[in-house]
Length: 172
Image 1 (cartoon, rainbow, N blue to C red):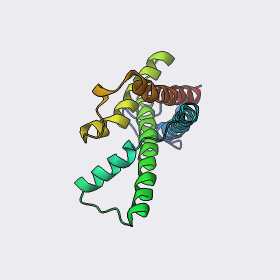
Image 2: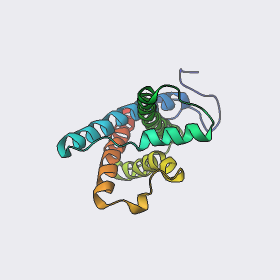
Image 3: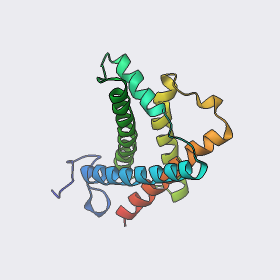
Image 4: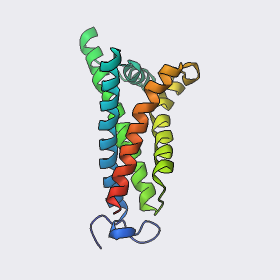
């Protein structure tokens, strides 16, 4: 059995002899590349408009820690630095995680046209990124301005385009 196969059944080797685990790893790599693109677009927007970083990732980590009864230790500054680092890490985990899900879908043999795939991935990553914040009451997308939406959607479209393009390249 070639490296990257999962076994027999619906998760057998697909095109090019790439098994489920091979697609999962490729999805993780595509998610990491997409996360880099999302960060680059976000930081470019921050530099161009002179806006600060969003505090919602740290607020999400803080709220999740409260709900889990987990203390984030340190004096005020140290604790804030930890929250900032953990907030950034959650974004990276979400980006790689969505890439893994894309890899799993690909392992099932499902393919899409570039625009359709990019749109589906954009929707998925928007839910992964904003869903927890909405559920926890940190942010309510229904109240966002057009500028807020553009600031959020454009980097996620960049993420999705890179993930889709990378996954398609693995399939050639």
